[in-house]
Length: 58
View: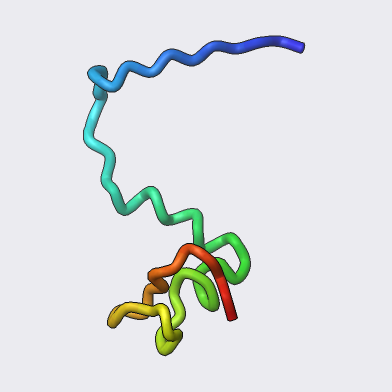
């Protein structure tokens, strides 16, 4: 099996990354958004409807 090595230099930056891109994949993970991360009216949801807890408890 081939091996690979990755070296990351945090001082080397090509361009700034828009922070909005980091959550865009969540929409495609089944009920991760509705009934998970975003659930207005849930006891653990903030005023915007986002759940504060890390678990998806019903």
